[in-house]
Image (cartoon, rainbow, N blue to C red; front, side, top):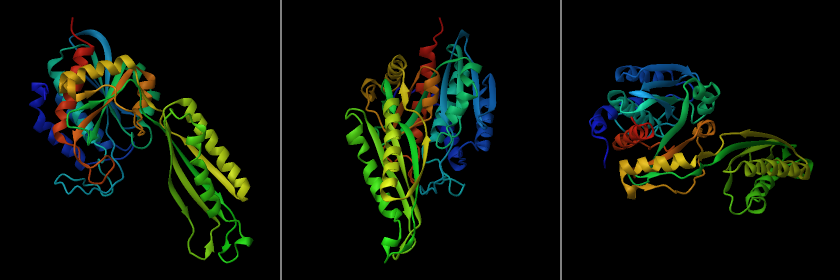
Length: 387
C-alpha cells in the first residue's frame, strides 16, 4: 500500500490519537472536550490559524502553502452516537451510553495525520482549510457550519471528505460522480381515536386498525407513484400503541424514514405520504397529526472533482483498488450541505471485515488511518501544486 512514507511514520501516534478519541465520545454539538483536544494537537502540529466555536464546537484550521493560491477544504466529522459499547476493547468508551460507532474518531485522526504532514512539508500552493465538524449524526452540523459562513469566511473553493466503510476490502476507495448518498426525511404520525373495551369495538374508534391501514398504504407509494428507475425507500421503523390485550387504545403512533436522490421525487414522496395518511384518517374516522421533518439533502458529488479524487485515490491505493463508478447507497450525510455550497466530492475508504456502522461492536481499523491521511495530503498537493 503506497502510503506516504512520512505519514507511515506517524502510524503509532495516529493510533494513540484515535484510541484517545474513542475513549472520550461526545454527542451532537456538545463536542467540547473533543474540540479542545483537537485544538491542542493542531497547536502541536503547527498550523497557522485555528478558529473555534463554529457551529458551537466546530473548528476550522488553516495551513498556508509556499505560494499564493486557492483554498481547499478537507472535512472530518467528530461526534459519536448514543450507543452502549460492546467491543470489549481496552480503549473502549468511558462514557456510559456513548460510543464512536461510526468511525468519526478515525475520520478526525486521518485529517490530523494529513495536517501534520502538510504543516511539515507545505509542498503546495494556497491554503488548506481543515474542517472539524460536530453533529453529523444528529443536528446537521455541516449545514450550520455552512450557514455560519465558513466557505466565504475562509475563501474555500472546493471541499472533500472521506467516510470509513467496514466490509469493503481494506484500502479500497469507492465513489461516483453525481448522487452518492440519499436524502433523508422522517415522518411521525400520531393517530387518535376513541378507546374502550376490546369486547365492544363498535363503541370505539380503533386507532390500531387505522395505523395498520396507513402503514400498508404508504408502502404503495414507491411501486405505484415513483418511476421505477428512481431509487427511493420508505421504511416504517416504529409502531407504538396499546397497553393490554383487552383494551382498544385511545391513540398510537408510527414513524418512517423516507429516502431518495432527486428533489422532485423527494417532494412527491412527502405529498403522497401526507395524502394517504390524511385520506385513511378520514376513512377510519380517526385524527392524524403528521410531523414531517425535512432532513439532509442527497449527497451529490461534482463530476470533475469526483473524477479527480478517484485519480488521487488510485495513486494511494492502486488502480485496482478504486471504484470510481460505485453504486449509490440509501444512507445519508450532512456533508451534502458543503457540496451544495462548493464543488467537491465524498469517498468511502474500505477498512476490511468487521462490525457494521452504528453497531455496538463497531471499531475503526487503525491501519486505515495512514491511507486516509495520505489521500488527503496528496489531494492537496495534486489540486494546488507549486509552480
